[in-house]
Structure formats: structure tokens, C-alpha cells
Length: 438
Image (cartoon, rainbow, N blue to C red; front, side, top):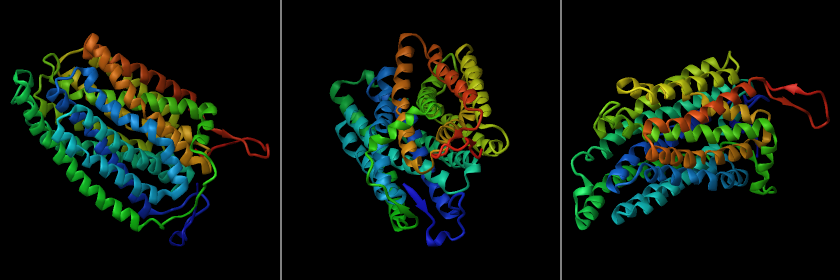
């Protein structure tokens, strides 16, 4: 996939297409898929209560959602090569709409498995949109500021993850404390599940309407970019990028980071409800989730400025190390300190995904969409690490289970040290290697 300046982009330079209006469009996509993803943190305690699930089974919500990244990322990159960025974004938004609508039959059936399927379809659309958004924001500007620009775009992702859980906790978690499903007969339990899951269905029905509106806007701008499409390579051709150590290690760290971030976000509500932590009611604990994602929002605005003057690798190693310390603090203390040290992790998570992504992607050039597809596949870590943490939690305690994400962040810190120097590229003619622009 290659981009050429459209007639409307006459001011573009050889360093990238300077298109402020398209950058705003991409920021909106980050906001949308970030907010919808964070609603999983609210759905998990709701479904855990309704279906009386263990911690490990409740985490299947994240497994169903993030497994879509494994299945759909490479096809998503192939769709970009075939149809272009804007058309692919519309396809992704409509797929997200279908996933939201599937919550209606899932609610009517009262079956946990149908909720998982609806989440998978929803996440498939998000995967396609994310494969578009990450490389597009990198291409819509000069390479020298790509780390900063991608981090700034991720701030809009964090804005969505901050706003959606607060509203979701009011709409979805408000009734959890009123009835104990374990005390109901089989018939009463089925009726209760159907009634209570209606709140989930109504929330996603409203999201479906909003997504259709955005998809129509995107479709009207489908010719905004003058793109040269590539129909020749198979979608698996991108996997050869994993042979590059910097890219391969970076993709592995995306797996670890997303898994750790999602695992922590998923456990926050139940963690804060524990008597030895903060002893909050479900709705009040849900209202604390925005502090976790809000920290990422603040951190990304700060990080977008710092990344212009400080080595991205050094910043990544530093914040990952701080997160390890916060996890150790939370796991070995009680009360407010245990709760707030866990919530504070969001601030230091802030720059990790965009920094790992941009460090791994340095020098990919026209293969940016392929690289984004491979990296998006690695987001399947969100399907693997949370259930692993749930198994450890069921076998011991939620506090001890924090060791699982802690180990992930140790390896992320190591990647920051490994990638602290600019990537070196070699021209096809064998000319002297040169450093990347950052």
C-alpha cells in the first residue's frame, strides 16, 4: 500500500501527507475503538455476577474479544491493500455495528456463549479499524515526529477509555447489588438474566446507531486519499517482517503489554470490591475504572511532548519499571494504598503501546500497513494473559495474581533498553547504513 498526495493535499511534502482534517478523523477512530474496548471492564463483573462465573471464566470475555485480533489482523491488512484506508475503515465500522446488534439476540437468549460471540464480531470490526488507524496516523505527517504523533493519537483512545466506563458503570452495573443470583431458582434465574442483560443490549444498540453514522461519514470521504493498491501479495507475506529482530521483539512486547493492560483493567472492579482493599460496591468500583484509563489519557498528552526530546526506548524502559514497582506495592499492601497503586498504573501505561508500535515499525515505509497487521495480531495477548491471571487468582489470591502482568512489564522494560538506539536501515543497493529520523 502506497499513499500519494491527493489534489486536496497540495501542500504535502516528501516527508508525509500533511492533512489535518484526516488526522482529526483518525483521532475520532482512536476514541471510538478505545471507548468500546474499555467497556469490557464493566461487562466482566456484570456477566460474572449473572452467570456466577469464576475469575478465569469471566476473563473469557477478554479472550473472545482479543482473539479477534489474532484472526482478523492479517485479513485486515489485506483489505487495506485491496480497498484502501478509508474504504477499509468503513468496512470495519459496519462490522463493529453488526457486533453491537448481536447483543440483542444474546440478551434475549440469556446465554453466556452468545455474548462471547457478539464480542468477537465487535472486536473483529475494531481490529480492522485499528489496522487502518495506526499506520495512517504515522503516514499523515513527517517521520521525525511519528512517536509523538502516534502517542497524541492514543490520547484520544484514552479519552474514550476514560469516558465510556464511567457511563457504562451507571447503565450496566447499577443493579448488581440488589439480587444475589445464587439464591434464585432455575426459572427465576433465567428470567433475571434476560432482564438484566437488556441493559447491556440497550447500551450497545445506542453504540450501533452512532457507528452507522460515523461509517456513512467515512464512506463519503473514501476518495480523500489517492492510494496505489497492491493486489499481488498474500496476507501471510507480512509475517516475514518477524525475521527483523527489532520488529519481532516489538510485536512480542505488544502481546505482553496488551495482555497486561487488559488483565489489570479487567480485575479493577472486583479488586476494589475486596474488603481488604477498598470494600466498594460494584457501581462505585466501576466508577473508579476511569481513573486507570484517565491516567493513560493524561500520560499520553505529557508523553507526546517528552517523546520529542527524549529517547523513546529510554522512556519505555523507565515507565515499565515503575509499573513493576506499582504492581509489587499493590500486591503486598492493603486498603487505599493497594487500590490506588493499581489505578496509578494507567498513567505509566500511557506511552507504551504507541512507543512499542513506532519503535518496532521504524523503517517499514510502504510496508507500514503489513507491519500494522502483524502487530495487531499480537494484540491477541489480551485474550491470553487475562485468563492466565484469572487462573492464578483462582488458585491463590488476586493480589498474588498481579505477578503475571509484572513479568510482562519486566520484558517490556528490556525491550526499551534494547531499542533505545535509533533503528539502522540499509539501502537495497548496499549503501552505507543510516539511522532513522528519530
